Image (cartoon, rainbow over the protein chains, first blue to last red):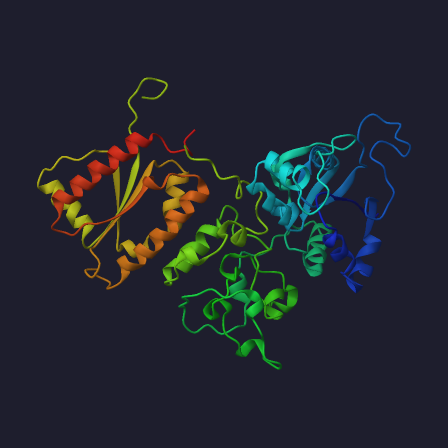
Length: 308
Length: 140
């Protein structure tokens, strides 16, 4: 009997769903063992009955629940709670579900300030009052799934790696647990490390790679002066190939896999590391967003308290 | 004064380097100098080993103030450990702002092994500053 799967997308771009599709051939082996009972991206399944006749939200019972995207409004919070009730094992898929993701950058501003900027005093389009009819109200900030309900399996990444989804699902089908090992991106990075000393910061667009350059012959991005979040970011994006994806494209790591250990603070660690090798910490622009680009939920990004 | 009417006694963590400042603290003690008991000294081998993580963790998990004491510039037992500490202190001050902690709660001070009186004076001053600021915003 196939295992029942419910999938739900919340505050997300849809990239993680594309990643599920991107699994490719292994998906063919996996599909007969899975039965999707709820998946808004693929199926027309309404929350309140097909004609809206029910009064309470209903998601079918499932063995495995997959949620991608963080929580931005009350509806998404409600869906998350319903998913937890109906699913035995809950997977949070992608950086948004695990740590808030890019949308959580908004956690730096209070909700009213956000409304002002985006709606009431919008400079790039017609300004208007905040829409409020027939749409759920926003939550005070962006939440990761595990801030609202218990999460059993985390698959971070923006978007995540198809191989990890296969590994996680296979492990769960076999009744095992799934966890990404606590390794840093640097552990899997093939670039050469020579001497740590940077005095100025370059921007990623200055990273022009000569044609034919091999990754094994190039130097560590940090040593070349690019801010790379490799030292404080969990590895695993490369899948079985090991080499981290951005590094493979000669781009510094942006930190989408989140902290190596739960409870770590990448911003403090990066600022500490960079100041220890002699860089003036004031040169780092917008450190809060740069070092916490994908991990703004769970209280990491919040409005700056006003000092009296 | 807090709600219960008790006088606010801050909890201050002091990281002192083994070679200068801890000896300075020792001298203050053996010379029987008086300084507030709010300070909890942690001896470390060098002020350059205090990672900003330790300071931020202390301040977000219950300490009201953190002071790092090291050798005077040029006197470091490990040649440039205290210069590293100075660079890190800049980073720490920047980050305190991100966490919404007043930057007066963190201080970096050079105390040599012969400066017992200076140690006592710095600790007294720092404790006074923290007492004026009140409990850390992270204390509930």
